[in-house]
Length: 300
Image 1 (cartoon, rainbow, N blue to C red):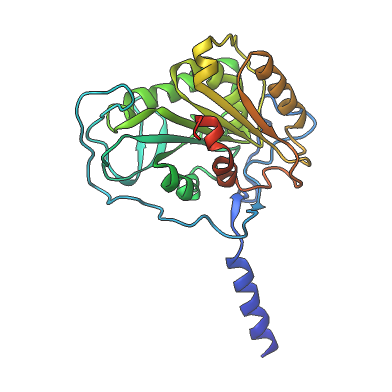
Image 2 (image 1 turned 135 degrees about the horizontal axis):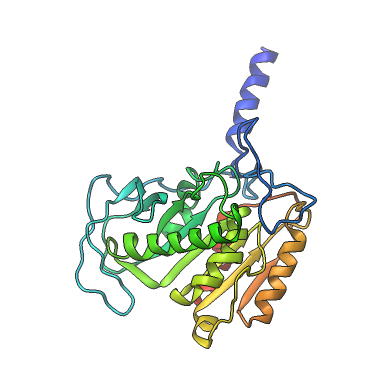
């Protein structure tokens, strides 16, 4: 009886825990991400419990698989794309990037877009779409999780490789998503975890923030721009940033601080939080977006 009771309690306790970052399988090759503090190799998507103690609630799919979107000419905020599959799908972009997408059935108004970039080892690539169900439902967002070109980490391979990856990601949005879905171009959001945040802050935002209205979340990983970044007044106004890291992160603290300084000096509007206790990625990334999305999008 005692053994059976302990087993039951173990199952209940396990079911009450969700993971903001998932541990990669034992033996997985780990690479040190560009821009991270050199003394600490990036362990990838490491385990961390969500502060709310439960998995994000909400459907993994908001629409029936196999149906298609439809629309007409583009407006000032909506792309009016046509023909994109709805529900949950894994696709390959014209630029060669694999991505998972959840797109609800067409609605009366264009939807925002949330682009998710995983950390080293890519263990959250297949989980990110379902992990962000709540914020997507609350703010009417299409969710897209994109696999790094090398299948491992976004900020790997050197300067040229990362600049090319930034251009491929930009092409995915412009050439694959905008023509196929009615997307609100004033609500384009990016969230990068660990090495995904390092890549987002070091290459993608400096190269392509000028092309979007919305903003970016750098979660448990950030680096200063690795390419020339001189944002104009429109970019400073239309694209806002949030930086998040724990006080005990062993990997990115110095790089995070340099990134905050660099973007502040560039005149970008940003918020930041490095006060939460815990180790690398030890927080609920969806909760961070929910807490700061209004600031990033300039909503009341």
